[in-house]
Image (cartoon, rainbow, N blue to C red; front, side, top):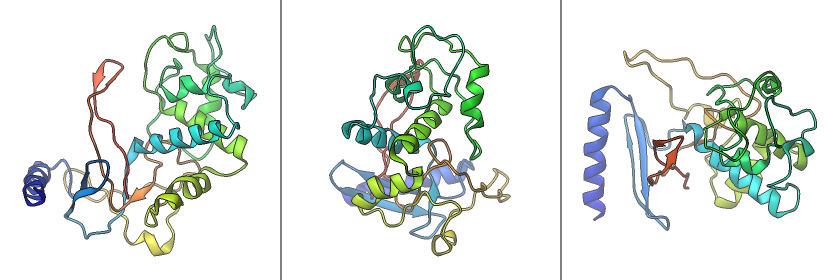
Length: 242
């Protein structure tokens, strides 16, 4: 079975790379208990990749951990933790639960944000698209709000929280939220490319890597896929593994 799976991965990777959709890739497959296959294409084993919005899963884990400790209340208004948080058009308070489930009514927000909290503060100049809890609408900025909440109640920066509460316990020694990357890891980071093969400049440091592209860089990221619906669109759910 392992050989058959590896052959299918090789065939899939060949198709993706030949299409120009990616210049390199690393894939791992897990059944939830163990790693079934792990392959790298176009890069050496151990190359580190930014893995995008999978980082939101880390944010959600931290939020639930701190809620379990009594530091956060899933159903209390966000403003109880961030008194300055406000957004127009609300008829009921936005809660942490709304943010976690993309049902707050907030705008989607940018995929890439700077290290400031400007985009969160700027929500005061926007209006919700619906009453909190009524619908689903994917929101990057909503997860950045959660990041600020995590830092506020814990007294620690987000990179430290992820390192001490997730990466460390799981033994993910080659994954990090540190920005810029430590010198010992920087040389292992994958370089982005345009479709024409031209290298893209790496993203600069960001202080808050809560979501979007501000995420851990992992040499072996296992993805599992399940059907889901978010704002009416089918997609996949991804999870990091050692």
